Every structure is written in structure tokens, then in C-alpha cells.
Image (cartoon, rainbow, N blue to C red; front, side, top):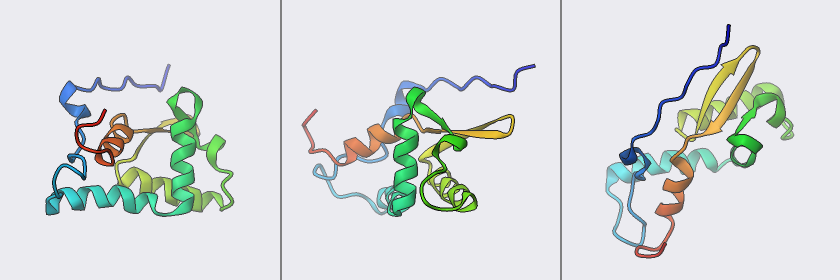
Length: 121
């Protein structure tokens, strides 16, 4: 019996970032609040490193067993991964005794678009 589950397909609208490029117009208070949660989570060097390890891992997902060597204890790694997950930057799936993390599909595109100039590709 397999414990894997199929992930839902994203609708085309789901890929839209939360906010327009910063050079297009000022963010609303709500947009700034939503966006700051992501950047606040990435403001910690260990979290940023964990996020980059997951994002760059072959296949687009990483087992916690493959990314836990970041110079802090395993409980601290779990704490930081939870913060990244709570901020909407990562999703996870338990497979047996291990947890696999992946970057949410629209996160990198949304963050990249937010930081690009309006009207540039």
C-alpha cells in the first residue's frame, strides 16, 4: 500500500503573485502584510539556507534527512522548516519516517515578479 498522494493541479489564476512589481505602484497595507511574512521568514540566515537547499534540490523536493546539516541541531532545523511552512514558502509530505519539503509552486515566481521592474520580462 502506497502512502503517497497526488498533488492538486494549479489553476492558471493560482500562479498570479500576491502583489504587482514594487516599481508599478505602492503596496496596499494588506499586500505589504502578506508579503512581509515571506520576507521575514527568509530574514534568518538558517531559514534562507534551508529554503535554498529545498529550492535547488534535484527533483524540486528534499527529504529533511538531506538538508539538516546547516550547523544547528535537528530540533532547530525542524523549527525553522515549520516557520518557512507557516509563511507559505514550503509545503511538506510525510513518507514513512521522513518528511519531504518542496517550495510552493508559485512562491519563486511571485517573489521574483514583486522585485522586478514593471514592464520588464
